[in-house]
Image (tube, rainbow, N blue to C red; front, side):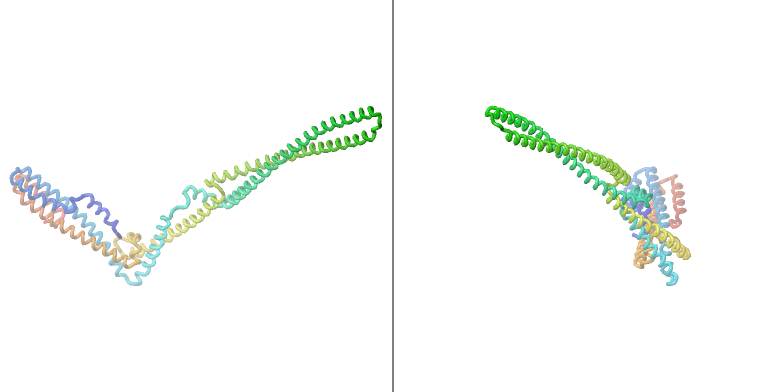
Length: 402
């Protein structure tokens, strides 16, 4: 509730006394009086002295509590007086105060809402991006370009790897054709030699001229040899071309790999520096930073405006010669909203009534304990004078007890 912090110390003090403070010091004295009086009637002066001394201690403590209650009572009264001063203001006097209080309440709410907002970035991330704010757009563009290059380089590497495999397979196929061609050439050579020998033997044995057969076989042998030679040369040329193409693919692949390593290092450096995984995440963080930076700038302006209106409000309230002007800075809503002011006033009035009732009850309790102590003074003997001195000191602390 409003102004509850003004009485926080008092409430803590009451709670610390526990159940004993619920019915006050005098109640404790009343509950114990009967039994102790019986003992006094049958006991010595030492017991009587102990009883009376205990009553004196309770009266001293109760008088201190009354002094504290008086101070708090006066404090509450001062705040009620301040409220009365505000209520008695004319419309012209109230207008500037109301304007300043409205701004203070609004700006204070904005600042409170900002402080409750969950931060998007850690302090380290925000400080880093703030330091490199001018370079970040270029960093993001380079990171995006490098990531695009990495994707293109990966595709190129896959393409070159495929071409290497293709040229290797083509060379292997050409080598197989070349081997088959050599084998066929050997077989054909053996066949034609055999045929020439057979035809020669046959021509000698039959004693006939087989020149035409030799001519035909010669042309066949030359044709087959030419075909085999051409095919062998083609295979050799294909092997050489496959080697050349494969070596070019390997060279290009090595260049692409070097470019990939350099680009990958550049990407990894930026990602590690800003603790992100890719350009998309860095761009997102940069957007978060920009939004948070705008909010902080708004907060700064709000704080400046709040200081301005706070000083103006304090100046207006100070002219009214109020008891406490600064307390209204945290309760500006009460200056703006009459319902808040009524609630505040009601709470203070209730608190003052409780304080008054508490003091009256404590005064009555002290009078009862004083009467009980004086009633047993005869049992103290030579210590009666000390009791009188203690009672005088208690009365000096608060004349209302006389």
